[in-house]
Image (cartoon, rainbow, N blue to C red; front, side):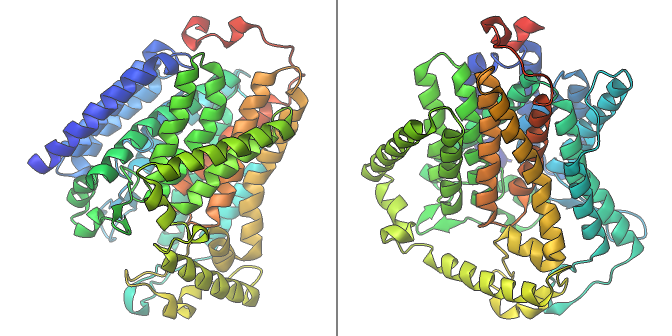
Length: 518
């Protein structure tokens, strides 16, 4: 019990401090009742999870709480994003009579089942009264096409000893069901529910609050060399490897509740992109700067090079999409140079340099060589099966198996093309690029008449672009997979706003806090 109480105390102390600081800012985007209810649910779930000896005991508390909170919330998408990483996303198999397990359950699927599906049902009811956006668009088509490929083309699990589990009708139905709750429900609910700028901004703000807590906890983890959520994962899974400490050189790579440093870094990079828009609605200059510093500090202590580049890409794209792009781009480049110099002269300077191979660093260079070998082998196999891929490709990559016992496919695009061919890769990219392009057209359309709306679009497009950059250096798992569909949904919702007649400049009163509007 003591092993659970100590990290819980640390998490509660830092989370309380963060909530106390961010509450005045968050209330600019959300009503008091919704914000405080979400905050209370976050604390209840955190306490329950960290003290619970069983995942199923946590589920017993979480299910009714999530359903009730989602039903009361005027923006369940914001509730979903705040709670997306409230606990570690470890999957626990649901036992079922006659088969080994029904499917794995984690916090992502729990939120989808208890928050998003009821919200989708509320949307369906609203649509009957013509109060909600409708329409089956091209992104829906390409997402469903991707799902059909996943269901039809069976990729066996990478099991030791080349054991190939046969496919079956049960497995196909399971893949179809999981695709619906993991992907389509997330995209559908977010893209339809987020029907105006206030709802989108509120969702972004809730996500940023969650990431601010994780960034502060990440600083503690690296400074103390102590993973705060490791005991939870080990207790729930019964697997000591669930609490494995990932190091870069001699330094702990923070991961908090995300299960991997790369996942945490990706989430913080996207939060930084969201904050680039949200800070324009925050009067205090110091609060704007503090937000940027918190997300980047969290990013740095993950020691994840790909997300660092991704975050810089987000900043660059966001800058290019704003008016006076050239002058802003020069200022941004100067700010990045100054910030990088400040980091180098800080206590983290030598540690950061040690992981940058283009700056002479050698720590982690073996992972770069491994990625190059994986890329070369993957594209050779893709050329052999270009259209629908090779579902048994892993059998031909045995020499690339790592000491951890896995073949780590760390390029999402190569992985999709490897197993589902260029057809699958086309559907995968079209799904997210189409709403991003439509959002770009919308930002151009409202740039003069509604600068705030254009800035919101620039943030979403920049985060999408940064995600596409980071997917080239990561697997499509954990936070990467969840936020891929979240971003597509938010961007599609924003693009839909651009289909209405061009708005007139908005009065200051229209940008007032949500609670005043309600």
